[in-house]
Length: 502
Image 1: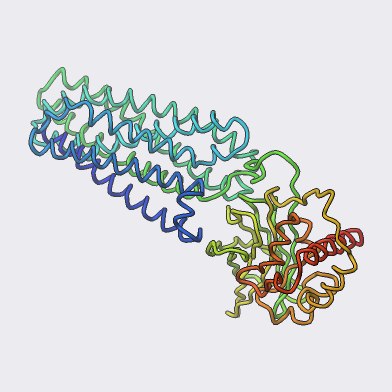
Image 2: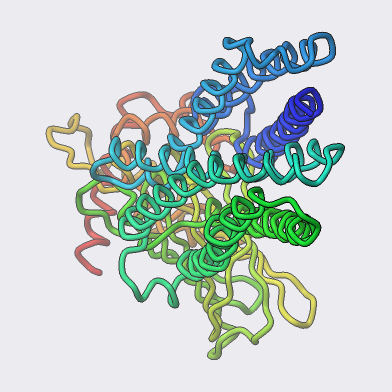
């Protein structure tokens, strides 16, 4: 029995490891493909670095389990005494949970990040002990007892179940306490249970958790005492009753495993959504949303991007067809990409709110520079319209910079150069509505919006060297450095004049 049990435990661990490896590879494919350069994502992005840490720990864990699997084949249950592979594997598993917590919602929420991350790790550890222990009990220990006769199997179970129940009971208590803390911290109000998709998904998880608790209590409070009573008398009626109790135990354990598997699937949905108000995940300070408008092929769109900074943002889109909202049944997909560098394209399907309104949240704006957020609107008729929105993000998280003591340059010369060379695309007022604008893809940006968002050096570089993946050419061969500064100063004046008029 011992040899069979330890062999099954190690085989189960190997199967779980293979599933973990598959999940890690899929995670790289899903997150890395939309990040442009994969190497840059792995070395520069926080989630990329966490992926590397997770992959490294998994490789070392695979080596430790390989040692145990080889030892089981040659030494049987004697490998139980090999302390270092077991302790090492447990430590590596705990390390993997640390990496998971460092990339969790708890770590992203501002205020007491260290405490929240630690509590998230304790929560995951307790879940792992409970769910992993149930899996080992259901698929390794119980089947290993099958060769035994009824009485010895009953006696072993009568000693085994209370020990496991002590671990499971402590784990459930910790899961409950830490789960309440995380819910209060992340939810942002009871109304989120019904008003937000993250809260609704969490409500499903809590309902499933409430359903699995009676199964655990049944094993602890009913089956375990019954087995202990039956071991005292092994006559025929007692043996028959014990066989029934063992069957009930097996079904209850398998039921717990099934319910916990469903709960973990729901948790997977939670990790891909933003809990509560997304602003709680951002640094303190005033932020203003971007409000962008565009139109194409009879459709008009307004995109409100809040808080308008690098990192998590909420995208709220309103689409109108003439004077009325776009027809119900329309679908919208966002395609987010940079215009001044190659970082790839990220896609996100927007949730329809009705009345031509759509929303999505996510960390799609990951760096400073010029961005395009294109909304692909697919109407019920089947035709698709592309609504492009463009914006600029700065190191100051999208906020207008305060510039003083700019280099002096004649404004009149800047105006002359702009009129002679730029208004064909950018328009006389700099709003991207010049006579050639409609033929340019992507359309020229609204300089009255974008210029205040960037420093003089960034604008100088764009004028001098052009903007990649756009029709903006390089002017450093035509303009002297002094003339470029003159154009920059004229654009500042033009943007300020437009702001005052608004």
